[in-house]
Length: 204
Image 1 (cartoon, rainbow, N blue to C red):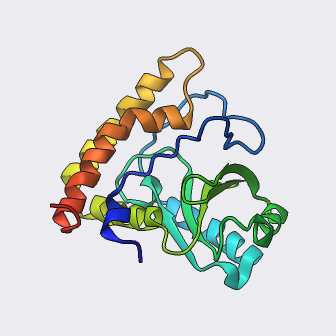
Image 2 (cartoon, rainbow, N blue to C red):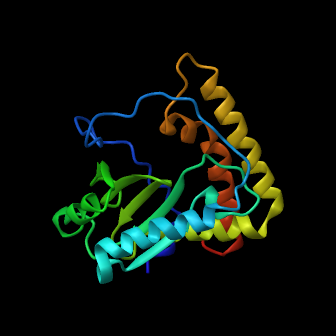
């Protein structure tokens, strides 16, 4: 289990100078869609989870539906976010080829950020974030998910931030990227995290 210090530290994922996280080239700007909660999203997650488990079997140590599509009532980009924990996310040969064979596309490699890897799936559209055991980011995602379920005021505040971020990105010629969108709503997210950590006694 990560320490409170590891959980509460905001590990930003900016690449070191000269590093490139993109396996097949950088993401291009696009229109950011934020839609109302869709009751089909839990079933979409189960479809993706079954695909991952079918490809990796007992190499799947943890598999979680995270992000806004995992929170009933919260608007979201229509993309299923999944946290997958494997024994060693840096050992791509142990899992990436089997995920690719199952229809996933290896998109991101970030050794500097918790040895994070990302694979994408098309139907349903899903981003599978791959980490190793005891990763603080996985704990943070689960905590944020539970906090959103339990605190309607923050859920509404986050929903407003998401809609504003999407509108700002889409006002740009050609739209924006997911990273642009995340950066725009980041101040609200970090404030919610701060109060969540204080409520759990992880920071004074």
